[in-house]
Image 1 (cartoon, rainbow, N blue to C red):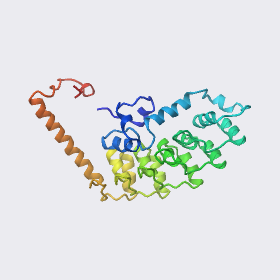
Image 2: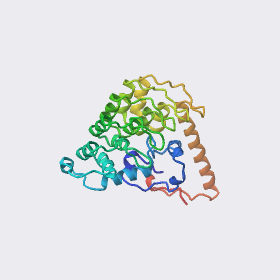
Image 3: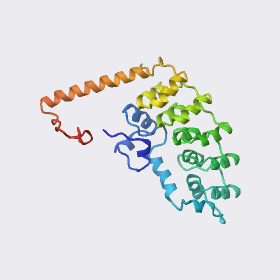
Image 4: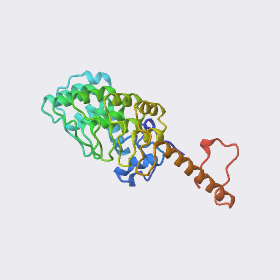
Length: 286
């Protein structure tokens, strides 16, 4: 069984599940959690979006020296978005000084979204000062604060807060920034959100609270923060499970699956397990 983490997701652009593109975007995040795999981490950013962001980062020089070189010529919209993604402040400033639109977006996300997930707080400050819409949405209605929580930058979240970002705002899947931070495993962000008044028992489209997500994904440090912060352990999701009960349900399903495999193996429909083979080399694929 392969577990995809946010770190692994950033290392390549090909989906590990070759059927992932056939899943509707709004279903992809929920399916990743229900299957026990951390594919999207909180969020709305699909594998396609990760590839797109990596392409922006890789196209052109991204050295620290290049960031300090004065920009003499005009900056077009693509270079502006690329500069914001790469953290090239002077190029962003040149674009804005020339009257460029701080709300420029491609087909799915705005420049503010990209700068937020990359952690470029100074650039975000500039964009907001020039009129960037802090509540601009991506294709799944995530705001910059959702992307900042996915990226894990406290500095970015604080800048967004100073400009009025709503820490309880929801995306299309009804996920709050706290849901996103929990799913991506950023415990420091979770702590900050809780201290800033984020609703600890917020429910997403499936009725899951951040506590449900923390238990499901094994976010033990975040689990402690939520419990200490007053998360209600009695709340049930739309399937009728509390955070604790969903673990018991999975354990039952696992036991049932293993029993079925044993029965199939007895009648020769499943190959016998190979002795003394490391677990990571065992595959149930035919």
